[in-house]
Image 1 (cartoon, one colour):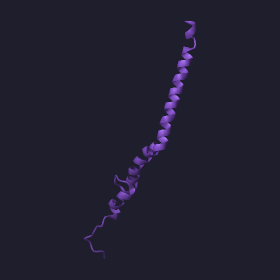
Image 2: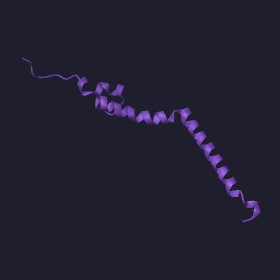
Image 3: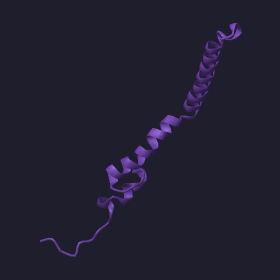
Image 4: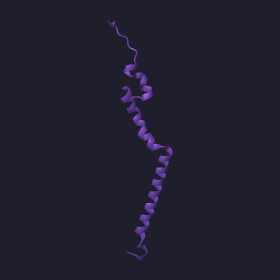
Length: 80
């Protein structure tokens, strides 16, 4: 190994670490600014919440009127 290349591996490793740290800091900042994680987590749960509450694949507010208990039904049998 030549004398002038002795620390090249260390320098390259440090440069790669600086690049990866800078890139990850930028990505995390963008995720935080755009609330990306919140939308990734909460959006699917809205549909699941609507299915649990109302029995239809819709947001809870939209599916409320589609719940079977809210359908106006008529009975042909006269209660005695």
